[in-house]
Image (cartoon, rainbow, N blue to C red):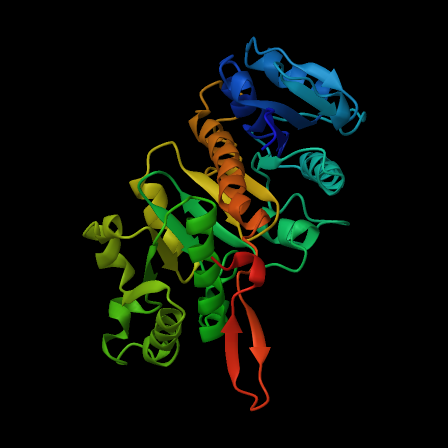
Amino acid sequence: MEDRKIRVAITHGDTNGVGYEVILKAFDDPAMLDLCTPIVYGSPKVAAYHRKALELETNFSIINKAEEAKDGRLNLLTCFDDEIKIDLGQPSPEAGLAALKALDRAMEDYRKGLFDVLVTAPINKSDIQGEGFHFTGHTEYLEAKAGDGKKALMILMNDDLRVALVTTHLAIRDVAEAITKPRIVEKATIFHQALKRDLRISSPRLAILALNPHASDEGLLGTEENDIIRPAIAELEQQGIQAFGPYPADGFFGSGAYARFDGVLAMYHDQGLGPFKSIISDDGVNFTAGLPLIRTSPAHGTAYDLAGKGIADENSMRHAIYLAIDVFRNRQHYDEPMGNPLPKLYHEKRDDSEKVRFTVPKDKKQ
């Protein structure tokens, strides 16, 4: 396995939010540069503005292409030279366009193999909309740009709780129609594989949440549990995936039952993320599983209310970087045995009666 520092691409996100603050604070600790080679996709002028406004001392080196990135320093890659107005704490289409330019440049470099993992600072999903971005969030954008036909799965996680979503950025009125047996099976299967390959959990246990209150009270409050969710769980069990439920979300989280499982699959965004953000501290991370590209992000948003005040906590950004590095290494270790499979010791031979028997090759006989 190649012994080198992992290259971590970091997109600067919404330029009026806390993206630069948490990035600069995270790399104020020199130990972070011992773990990886960071490449921030953004604007030196914007970064300098934030650093001065926040009275931070983190140094960075300006580069024009990823190939110029050096170990032992915070590399800031220039994605655009335009002067843009910075209005800390305020949404603006200009800030959204700056976020998109960084994302698009990072995707170009990903396709060239110029970095190993991606960490994204938060964007404003409304302001980034426009030519080149017609998605409801990072997850959907990355699935289209870097999925190679694979489906993405949003997982919010820390060491104690991992919550994945069947539906992500979808209006509540559309959720019930989007909950189907194939979709639950697909998302749970991706979740199961991510727990094994990316997080190295050998035999994951999944909890599947109900859609309706009280898991529908045997059909009194809806039919999705009996018609869709329970059959999906049965199919997962047939595939050898340990899946249990469906559990009513309120009692499941309120009682602490989540602690008995390696992952929780929620039916919709707020069902999973509301409890997650109430339970976890400041180390939560958003992990996009299921794609060839490893992508993580802080679990918080643009935090306009904190922008420019110097009080944003960088812990979630730091843990997002840690997780991206861990997943990269875990995938290497998980995939390594598959790279050189053992040669077949037996081959099939048919006799005149067409009965199949197996013979040991001559060079393998004792």
